[in-house]
Image (tube, rainbow, N blue to C red; front, side):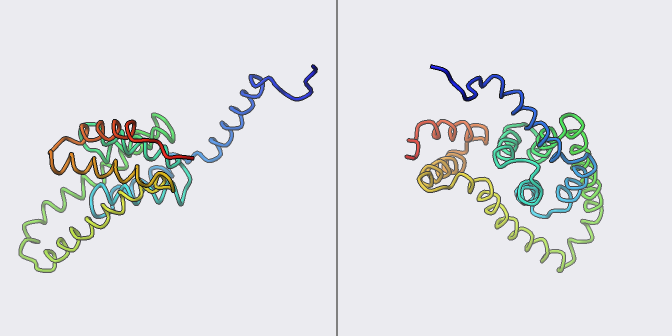
Length: 207
């Protein structure tokens, strides 16, 4: 029986890869754009790593579609597994996804040098702020805001997977991870490994 349609998928694959490469190149940000985003939001966001992660998510996933939800979650998870400063590892991972070595180096410098200088300046002025009631009130307000932003970050990472039929699975994995960290005092790496095991053990949602 003679086939009239295209059945050789091998011939279509190079064309699909070429189209993907063209689309990726068109959406690829410049090094100056990457440096600008990470210099602003990795250094000027109050509330610590969780707040910064949430803000960067809004900038590079929602506002500027530089990376997908899956790529963002992968970089976030790898940053948590990396020893040292998790936020900086996460940012460098995003830079690598965007422009490989050049992107990683630009993000590393943009996300580390300005905030280092800011911390040095704050440390010098800390002695004066200890006696200032307005500064103390601002610090207490920032701590309260950081808690809310941390919750927002958790939702930012989890909500793409929080779909109908998969919600109980996501909640159970989250509860298990929190219990092992808060009650049994396991390290983040051990918690992530146990959460991965739980994700394999728990039943898959029905289609």
